[in-house]
Length: 502
Image 1 (tube, rainbow, N blue to C red):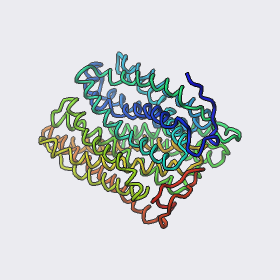
Image 2: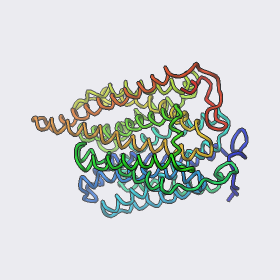
Image 3: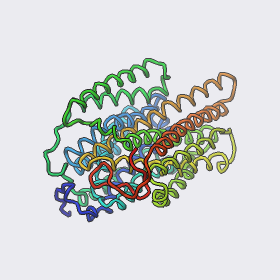
């Protein structure tokens, strides 16, 4: 096995690490299976319920346990990558995630499956945060870094789409357990590649390592756990229940204490000064909105296809290919779009496409052709998601010092997961409530579900509308466009055509 010596960020050449493209492929494969697991179980849930005799509540936690632990530990995982080393955090997370995937496939009860899914989330947190930090560290030349971040961001939508298709194929052709066992060979191959290719990337630039902020870590994890728990439980208990409002109120108190601790700590887990950077804050808010929309679309379309239109799991998975095709087309065209429009206007374009796609899905019938009912809206949403994710991720990570790239990526990824939980909780709760009302008024179940999910897409159109307003306000508030010039982070540059900081 080739030797990978410790490399400080300052030692990288102006072009970056000599094996940077192979490194991108290795860490990208790991990120792909992390994102794939966010959606692959959607179409497998009915089969899991039958095989394990799982209750509706247990079935919900098969999805929620992963989101809960993943979202609450991302910030901690990002800081651990900065302090302990990016490769070390990446490898530890990958090993835990791969072993947990095998445990999911071997689960003999719903309780064991939920526990294994929680363990997957624990491994995914440092894995995902360190992976993005590695990409930022090994790509130093601004144009190449932009390409790498474009590829990285595109993995989100493509991974989610492939997850739904693969999940349907596994259920139809083999067994739902293969939806998890698939991660094992990919994880092992990625681990070998990472140990061979990825340098240790010694934290910092030769200065003393920051101390670990234990009080901040405890408060951050506790606050995010309670917040995520409250959000994902709203779909089951309702927004006004004690089970929902109690954890959310508790999280606000704990996160307020976390903010006080961060202001008084020299080596803070989350330096609040980052939130004073306009582009970084807009990046986080935009990612939260886009992630909530994406995950909710995957869920609602998959359930609508199976429960209302009567599709098989494989047909439901294939029904998401419109989104995947749209995303792939935009991914290939995004470099030209960024060069022409810049980061902020590309985000605005993506938000407008998300709004248009959501509006195309607000009138869902109980029957009809896939090509007229679902394909137009999902394809337009597929076009909009990479435009948002690429521009926002690039905008966010270019604003911080390289030595804090793990922290920044952990924070942005945290907002992605909180956005997913918030989107699922609010929109699915709204859709379920409207469905219940329709049933109470005497409508058939299929008709009621179609009406409920139509209301869900009205809500998603509202989410996309907020994203449009955020993007429009930021575009109008930026200064005159300038050619590539340094951003806040060392060595980072804003691509040609990008707007300056607000």
